Amino acid sequence: MSVFFAILRKSVYLFFALTFLIGGLLSTPSTVEGPGLTLEREIDYFYSDGAAFCQGITTDGRSFYGTGCIKPLFYNAIVRIDMESGDVLESRDLCLPYEMIRLGYSHLGDGAYFDGKLYIACETNTFKDPAVMVYDAESLDFLAYHVLPPEGQGNGHFPWLCIRDGVIYYTQAREVSEVRMLSLTDFSFLGSIPMDREITKIAGGDLLGDTLYLSADSDGGKKITYAVNLATGETKDAFVRDTGNEATEAEGLVIYSENGRTYFCYVDVLWLCNASIRIYSFEQE
Image 1 (spheres, rainbow, N blue to C red):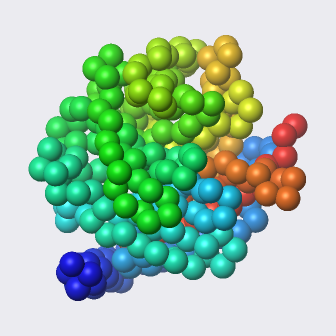
Image 2: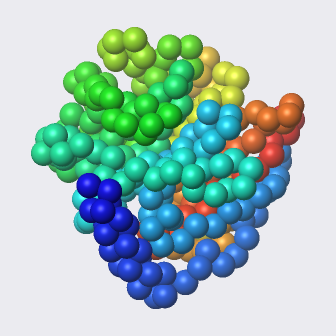
Image 3: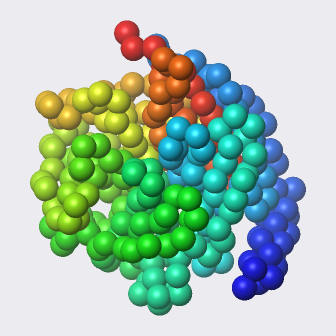
């Protein structure tokens, strides 16, 4: 099986090497419009490494965990990345078991680390019965899946999730007017928080205090991050990141603290195989 995975990665490498030559590099450094966010570090990944986490990112405080998906190739992956060096330490290709693929699951999105496990949002080809996929963070082995309750499925798009105090928070991708919640204990639907405006093209999100930050794949190279007050539903434009290329897609987001500082870490992707981790320090006004 390991030989098969090696062949698969080489095939993905060759396929996206051509795309890389056509599409070019993530050529222009990211900049930020709006107060509070400062670009500290940018790490670029190409070919199969970039493809392996072109959707989401989370962290346990020691490593980043990235998720990737290329639907035309039926390819999903999870990688572990050293937070200091940026090196890819381990990659689990075809991380969706055959049983899940047979049921129609095809798209791993953004997820969260909690208590030794990775919880990843996953959609089906038909956008019915989206599910939370659960993996062991140490081995990257698949453990279980939990289909969202019907009342929490919305239009079936399930691009991201984050976790706080036993609650899974998430939204759909488009026509987003509420933040939905699941119980981490039994994955029952806990209700939703209405937002005071509708937003769209949401690809990732994470919590900082009582504020939920949502990363949007806005049109063009400038990508909006929204801030949602979970107590009131007030939704504001928090930051605009200029990713430097009109074709760049904004994907996952994780917020974490290190040495007394808060960081926003985004995944930006160009031509499906060129992924950048962009880390910004954050200063609350």
